[in-house]
Amino acid sequence: MQGSAIRKIVHVDMDAFFASVEQRDDATLRGRPVAVGHAAARGVVAAASYEARRFGVRSAMPSTTALRKCPDLVFAPPRFEVYRAVSAQIHAIFADYTDLIEPLSLDEAYLDVTADRRGLGTASATAEEIRRRILEETGLTASAGISYNKFLAKLASDQNKPDGQFVVAPGRGEAFVETLPVQRFHGVGPVTAAKMERLGIRTGADLRRQSLAFLQHHFGKSGPWYYAIARGEDDRPVNPDRTRKSSGSETTFASDLTEPEAIEAGVAAMVDEVWTWCETAGRRGRTVTVKVKWADFQQSTRSRSLAEPVASREALRDVSRLLVRSLYPPARGVRLVGVSLSNLETTGAAVERLALS
Image 1 (cartoon, rainbow, N blue to C red):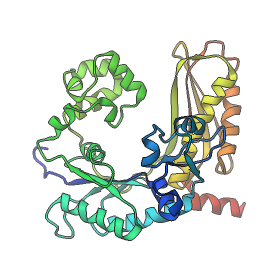
Image 2: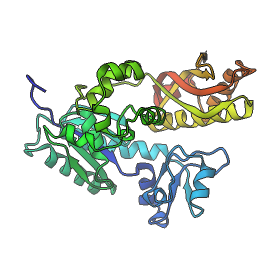
Image 3: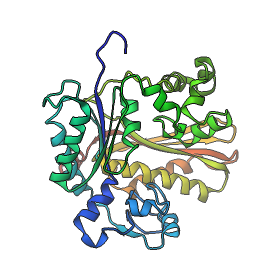
């Protein structure tokens, strides 16, 4: 941070957003374990209330698994139009404090409040006022992380959930990071965390002990990022013009798959994750890509671009299934599958195109 002013970054994250909206609007759901999604055999949990999380229910979990963990789980069908309307209320509050707002999804965003537009004195006071107004105007709670960069602010927003906030002050970032498990770090997914575990890297302190050369050798282009965040460093600006170009999800299987039914179940699960993001973000796309990584680590991809945006979860599933079937027979065994949707546009634009066609 030498040579530049210390930034004041707030990461605001709504608490169990979809589920909290459902509990707000339906008094019979309050205090009960709620999952937003469908209980059908191929359903996936889009969000879980804190009551459900105590049983181990998590977003992106198959509905059948969630019900096994919590037999009293109540499923609420998703209402994305309502979530988008509430999100617009929240973002209007943000805009009273800064123009530098970087939405990550309907329920979280980075704010650069360095300029202190409302003269509140500190970023912590700004976050407190924003959270109070969100509660007053929407009836929902939010948590916040406050720090001098985006990486630390996002980590901090998880510290005192729900309905709390946490500050990582200048000069405290490295000490804060060193005690945390690497699974908490942005950019470290389950597969990378497992690889780090095999290398003896479990905490931020373990990660900081590794040289840049070691991290580049084992993690390639992600090595410099891991080297920086282990020291609490992140120079990324809050980008109000950030536009996501695609939505994708992939999973590495515990063992290599050769049965088409099991492979297609993996593809269907990735479709559900991608479509949940599309619904949340109000985006649709025209190009579907399926990726397969084989047992020998060779990779194959198949894509199809459509004349119109993919209109439904079922349509995305059908196209993805046809694409993966074009790679059969899976003689080598499948290690990983991924699904992505690109050539994105907003739902409104997509609907308008369909209406005019």
